[in-house]
Length: 421
Image (cartoon, rainbow, N blue to C red; front, side):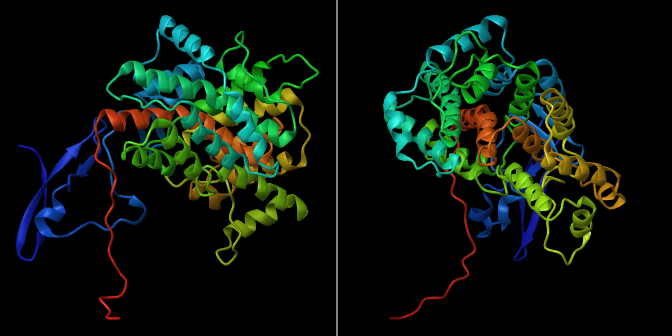
């Protein structure tokens, strides 16, 4: 007999079934709650509400576990490429050599963006934030690919996925190169997916581009670590927009806008801005660690601790090593990065932070790597979006295949009662 939860209200007892996931997570199925009792649940921020059942990503914040389709983030970042992880998330299994060769070939064949998109890009002032530019250009892809996608057609769905996987890195590189005042690049068919991202972003117009293994490996790990993260704000946005049967490009564009916020994807940008502020104030890391511990002080130490991970961020352990390798390879001598290393050392040895498990998270180290690579601070969240793209695609695809109902939260009304004019 299946387990149930009983709720007693107005002297009547109601039973609601429990549902259980493959990792023994349990939830109360309250689909019939309002119909039976007239009640709704109140859960600001949906912290205790499961909006869907998903087979894509498992996250256990208490134990610091993150897995994509059952594979640990540690194994994937060590043994797989970003494009292989993208295939895994979207299609459900790691690709065979034949499958990944076909996937790469299809992406290469679609790696052209209509020239009129450049006209749209040129219309933005140079001061425009790259996230706004990226969201707009992604949405514009709808106009250049207007045919509707039949979600029951594997061919239609694959074509839409290929188009986005192929063109999105180009739009990302264009957003960066507009900020830097550089000519726009296209992909090079002799390079792999992540090498192409590096080439499109960093190639100087008067030089041949030779990919650095350390830089490409670091980018590969960063993109894998950001590829999906369960039902976060931007992913939930992609799913809820898609639940209206809005298309993939429109849904991802909405996800980009959600990611833009400083409480979500903008956190790695906030880390560097914090470090710059500390530098301007003399660079005393001990002073700012003391401020962070003072409950009366409004200062917040960005890039430490995590809303979901209550122990440690498993992604941070992986990317810390990559950050050290990048700094050594590039021979960076940057006072901002020295301050970052000072804060890291203080936090890892200070009982206050150790007892509260306020360890550096993935945003802390990703910000350090992006700065070392010469990526402008305002581009950090764009890089996050580039990594998250396959997760958004996978989540949108799962939602549509499951034919999930349109998202429509309820509310508790607290306004005025009926008033006569």
